[in-house]
Length: 145
View 1 (cartoon, rainbow, N blue to C red):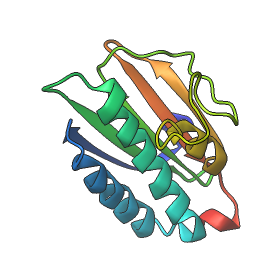
View 2: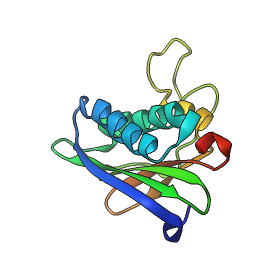
View 3: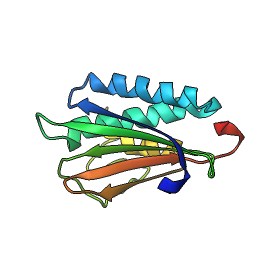
């Protein structure tokens, strides 16, 4: 999704608190519903929640926050979620069906990006200074309308 295609944009800053993840879910759900997203709203909200949780647990240094950006693109009839954080991060994150390196099938955490990989149409990590942007996209079609 290119910026010139953006027809609607929402951004909101959140402090590094576990409670902020629920606020991210509400923020993204409200935007998606206002834009008439349709049946994929739950997938969009789930992915936003997973990206925000990763930012809180792994990406945001203590005393800082993170930015959530939601874009709607008319030309591609799609939606993009970005989570910007200023923490050290890797831009080479890999996801496999088995989970993160060193994880066990019985682990109760470490599956966030696997969920994003399964629900979103595309996702990735981009470098920014400082930190990174973890994003996911949902492409067009009847399910987004």
